[in-house]
Amino acid sequence: MFGKTVNENNGIEHPSPKPIELYKWILEVVTNPGDLILDPFMGSGTTGVACVQTGRRFIGIEIDPKYYAIAEKRIAEAQLQIRMEI
Image (cartoon, rainbow, N blue to C red; front, side, top):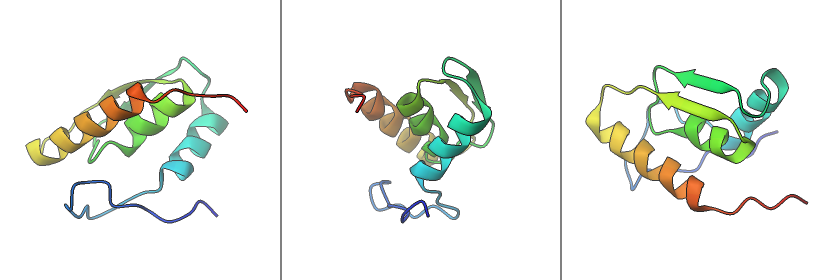
């Protein structure tokens, strides 16, 4: 239903990858644009990317510096993308 997960982690496997499309759908169903979303187990930043893509604000917490760096890069790249409404 939501497509495949994509390893966007510079070759680093994540133990529990999730498709961005699933997280975008969840955010759009249960939150409003501009809401603040907290992810206390941020991992590689899928929730943060989905927040950027759906107009939500985001706070992420990650204990592993390796995954924090991956999430930081992915979210920054998502922020640079231009959102075009169709």
